[in-house]
Structures are given as structure tokens and as C-alpha cells.
Length: 201
Image (cartoon, rainbow, N blue to C red; front, side, top):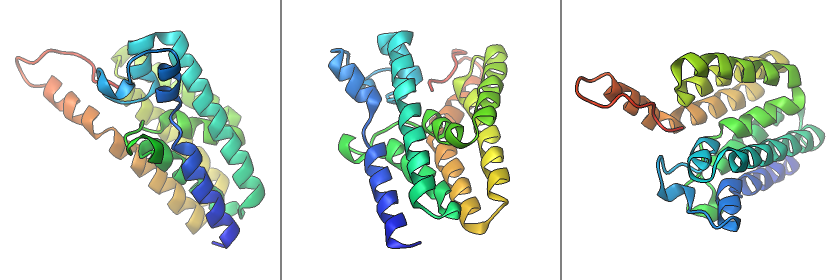
């Protein structure tokens, strides 16, 4: 990677470190999403705290930022390094410099990033999310199904180039790791005597 690409990646991480969930709730005089329910500043937790319209606004802002990053990376970075911009954007979302490194899980962010280059795959991913969520009512499970479609789209577009593929796989691994608390909650759900409640997103 050249210096220009590295500069884009650093800028992308810093841009991703701006949490719209925290900022929008603060402006609306709602509690910090990291202090209630799942403690995650993601759209699902925002919906619990401030309602679906506010969560929808946060989702749109996350997606718009990701689209802008993808377009900028496609212009200023080599083709096989674009996926790394997605990785650094999700990294900023997961571990935001400006919010004590406590961020979201990166699903909506990665959706927007892929949507900028592959809108039809992004729509398919949203459909898969819905089809998975409706019968299960488990957002984390639906997010993993969506992630599978997004990763598949990215890999196909990259023709499995090593640098591009590694960036895509690292991004997916980062998002999956962010859901580890959900898998723990799902495991407890199966134990006798525990309340059967879907884990928080």
C-alpha cells in the first residue's frame, strides 16, 4: 500500500469513529445508548431508547457515511485496497477514538459500504435479514445472514485477489466477533429455567 492509501485508511478510521447513535441521542436529550439495555450504540438499541424514527435516522446516517467512504476509497485507492477502507470504517465504528473505544457492531456500516458498489446485493442482503428475522426475532442471527450475502458480493467483485480478500475476511471477522455477547445470550436461552428473550443487537 502506498502513502495515499494509508492516509485514506487513517482518515476512514477517524470518520468511522464519529458515532451517530451517540451524537443523535445526545442532541435529542436521550440517555447515552452505552448506558442502557445492551449497552451497544447500534440501531436496535437506539430503537429501544428513542424509538424507531430516531433509529432510522441513525441507520441512514451510518449508511450514507459508508457510501461516501466507499466512493472516496474507489477513487483514491488501488482497487484491491478498497476493501481495507471498509475494514477501517468498521474498525472505527467498533472502537471509536472519540467515544472511549466503545462503539457499535458495524453491520449497518458494512451494509452501506457494500451498497455503494453493489446496490442489488445490498437489497438482497436486506431481504435476507428480514426473512431470517421474522421467524426468529433474533437481530444478531439476521445480521449474520446479511453479512454472509455482503461478504459474498465483495469476494465476487474482487475476483478473490489476495489483498482485497484479506480485507473482506478481516472485516467479517471483526463484525462476527462483535456479536460474541449475542452468542453467549443465545446459549443461556437454551438452558432450562432461564427467560426466553432474544438477545439485544
